[in-house]
Length: 179
Image 1 (cartoon, one colour):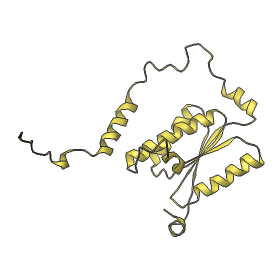
Image 2 (cartoon, helix red, strand yellow):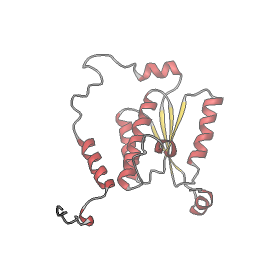
Image 3 (cartoon, helix red, strand yellow):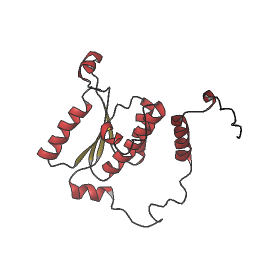
């Protein structure tokens, strides 16, 4: 029989979420070299102005934030239905629930994971909005810094960003929230 080494004390090891968050931060901080979306001087994208003219609308990100049960999804669904079905606008809704089934299913609810969820949703929303889609994002997104980063990323790309805070009394939220 070989003698087993003594187990490492578990308190000295970081949990999986902490390791994943640290790795994600290091990957996002690395320089984006050798990533060339378009050759210098080449015209490889249809400009937004031309796209907006053909579509008859401009893209925008409408970021709806607030507590669970505050009505973000309900209002966004009604707005989406009106814009699409009655006004013929190209619109799409990105919701925390539909993100968790795919794009953010590897994330939990820690502050680092929430920040990453907001970053991913913001990137997707910017792509849609840049393509001329009215994009509604409905996320709790509790941290101002994360929403500010989303807004700044849109501003850097020249994409309109409007934040709507669903200010609903906590007693109403508690009565509504099924989660």
